[in-house]
Length: 256
Image (tube, rainbow, N blue to C red; front, side):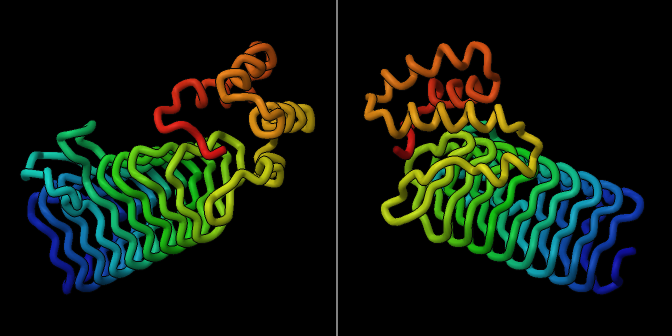
């Protein structure tokens, strides 16, 4: 399953069923789980741990050192879960000692061509990053978020679960769960109703989220006042509680 023209370091650990294409390079301290497919001309550097049934297409660069001038060669990691797809020219860097020391990609993510995932980023599950999306360091992307092509995310920003960004937006503040944003400068434009329906949210849950969105974005309340208004519905509506918790723990404030 390893093309004879590939270069695989003797210390790399490849499970049964791993495929490595021609001219790919697998470096030391790399672990790859069963069923993962590595196309031609990919480069994977360690320390990196990759799970099962992933697909890594040609010219991807996975596990390179962080593009951070403070990095001094410390042992840091990249951890990738299962069933992810990384298309052509994707770059994913390891973590830095200034943060957790790990860049983490969860499961079932769809990472399209030319995406960059910088050091210390954390991706959840079922995330879609469209072509040329660029994540600066320390970015958190929660489950089921979708980022449109050429989205650029400032360092330390958080993108909430089930949120959606349009094309070519510059994200400099957090995006709450469920919210759709677009434009330059970026602005909120309702909730991701279509995505929520596809993922099994009930009509009542979607109504609750819409009501919370109106309190946050249409009531002309200050953020602190909006949070206070959200506490009552959040006590009985888990979908609103998720939004409230996100807002209460936001460190960069939110796109509003």
